[in-house]
Image (cartoon, rainbow, N blue to C red; front, side):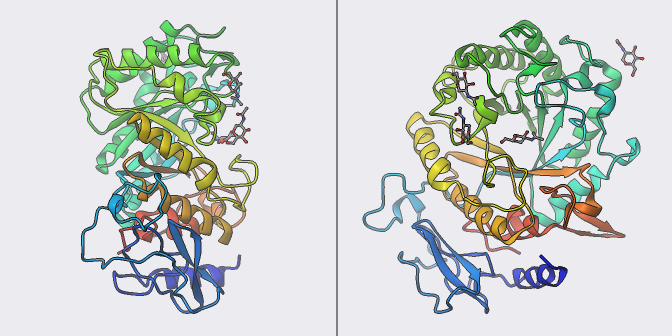
Length: 436
Ligand SMILES: *[C@@H]1O[C@H](CO)[C@@H](O)[C@H](O)[C@H]1NC(C)=O
Ligand SMILES: *[C@@H]1O[C@H](CO)[C@@H](O)[C@H](O)[C@H]1NC(C)=O
Ligand SMILES: *[C@@H]1O[C@H](CO)[C@@H](O)[C@H](O)[C@H]1NC(C)=O
Ligand SMILES: CC(=O)N[C@H]1CO[C@H](CO)[C@@H](O)[C@@H]1O
């Protein structure tokens, strides 16, 4: 996509307001939608599914294709009761507004591989004082200019322990990671502490041949001790377990971490429980992760603030490595997961998603986000992958394909196309919000 096309999109995206036309790629209809139903010039309103119609460039312009009546925006109608006749039992029951929306700030996980091997010295703190990118500046921009309120801060287990297979934290290394956590907390955002090890330490699976559950629990107890008194910390037990042979044994490892976190005094913060298959939202239930993780509880037997961790990309192989998106994941993943969560009275958090800076990703990711927002009773929110130390000079056009790092010229931060169009709350991609 050319720079001219990018700036054209940015310009059109600025046209917002409750009674204005929806911007290009904005929502223009669907069950529960109360915003604009006509589209900015040059685009037309196209029905994607009963929950979502979207302004697409070049689409046939008479814009009254939405099948669903749209209530007056000034009338507060709970969306669960605003469904059209014939709507399925999975009708959205959310408020249209997600509670947690953020971006991954990557760097302390650099040097980690998907077999759980990490090299502590390869971690690259995304902070200027450690010669990284300006993670503090990025987060401040994301909060103040874009409306984000959550950052996920991946870190390799080996960085925290200086490569030792132990639960004992090296406080020299911890101080560097804690500088990033404090930078995050300083913005007022929620900060997810994410141990980025794929359920492994140097190739061996936790509790199944690798570190014992006791060692894993010791690690989490030590981390939680540092953050026990801060309500803005969210504990991400593990990034993307995969090919874990026994899902019930994995649930026992997760339980060990949860118990350790709670017993360290972090009694009320959110803890994210990850399933198998790279925490795929699509197979969370079908491959057994959901049922196994339902058994994990707080020490008092409750499941308060135990939230399932799910990831989903939108490219052809769900790898998050391709610039083009091919799906909004609604039918395959989000709708069945929403039903399962609702029937089990539980919630999930999509802590990794994203795409290239392409029209296809803008289209499909905006749809996914709108669906999640309409189902905010069961989905806390989403966190885009990724900013931090992914090179800003190349993230936009040709570098790291999923880069969400803004470019900084003097006092001005400029977001990537995807962030500006969909990921940022200020884009208006959540239904019920109209941008700013
Ligand atoms: C922690 O790592 C530092 C080097 O960064 C080292 O000098 C120190 O001995 C380590 N501390 C412990 C307790 O191992
Ligand atoms: C699906 O679950 C089974 C065991 O429950 C496991 O062996 C398999 O590796 C899982 N698949 C993936 C891709 O994680
Ligand atoms: C893992 O998830 C992907 C989609 O997220 C799916 O295509 C694949 O079949 C899953 N593998 C297993 C074994 O469940
Ligand atoms: C950096 C990182 O964690 N990438 C992973 C993102 O998720 C996909 C699967 O959903 C993995 O294949 C990547 O390794």
